[in-house]
Amino acid sequence: MSLILPTAPASARNISGVADDLLSALRGGPGALAPARSVVVIVIDGLGAIQLRAHSGHARHLIAGVGKKDVAYSVFPTTTAAALTTILTGVEPGAHGLVGYRVLDRARDRLVNLLSGWESDGIDPLAWQSQPTVFERAVAAGHPAYALGIAKYARSGFTKATLRGAEFVAAKSPSERVEIAYQLAADIPGSLIYCYLPEVDKAGHQYGVDSAEWIAALEDIDHALASEPPRQVGVLITADHGMVDVPAHRHVVLEAGDARLDGVRHFGGEPRMLHVYLDPDADAAAVLDTWRSASEGEADVLSRAEVLAAGLYGAQTTADAAGRIGDLVVVSRGNRAFYDGTAEDQRSRGMVGQHGALTPEERQVPYIRRGAFSSGGR
Image (cartoon, helix red, strand yellow):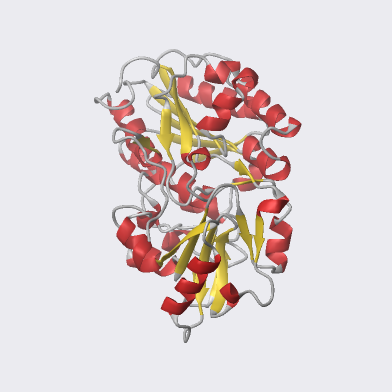
């Protein structure tokens, strides 16, 4: 069986290179970004390059001067826990270990939420994400590091897993976050500043791309980015993933009696990218055949061995990360989403905008250079 993967150009950038790009710019070495006195990376959660181009009239500051090459590709799965961690560590999910939204903690035989369940699910950030962050690397090289975000994220487990080494600075609005980021960059030469803007992703999940609420969130961020960065400060604007709208008639609901439920112990991941964990005594080959037959045209279904052989989680996958991947991995095609009928999935069926799979809308993200990064680099 072949997996339908959008083909990326051989020279395409990947978000796994962002950390090295930033550190290289601080060192003054040659690279994708020109040398800069201080660097700011702004991550607009959920804003894909395709959505940005389609709504350029609502983002005239953000889109100004952007060309077809100002694009990078996200990782698999295209979800915040995996992709944002890749941006902030410089390694792919197979190396950092956050391989999905919900994954199985096999030692305890329970699903854990890798975005918001660190405390409630009893996950140790250092054990589950042991790769050094870009902030730890920056500080070790003598560069102060700061992270701008929303106050409620300041002490979260995900923050401890991904922002180690940075001083967290809370600010309420996108404009406040960007303003403080620019001020820190100007006042503290040699600094690395991360600025997180989750508003577009939140509006997309609740209302969908193209909704008035999503457009308002985009316009608010565009307004925040209207001001020029300080002199000699390089600014990179990117995203962790894009998004597609999933209408109700594209929901694939696995109800009682569906053969795809046979032999399944847990469903992890998220509706557009399922980790399917099997009962210990299940016939894995038979379950795989059942899923492929029943899901033909709706999803690509792979065994864990096939996923690892294809390198979907990166060139190298650690033993810990491999153990968190489902026995089967179900990747939605088009704008479909899978639901297992549990209470948690019933709640998520209200989401309009979704991500996690491999469509161009989800994989392609902006790679926009401003300030000192506007010229030079490669």
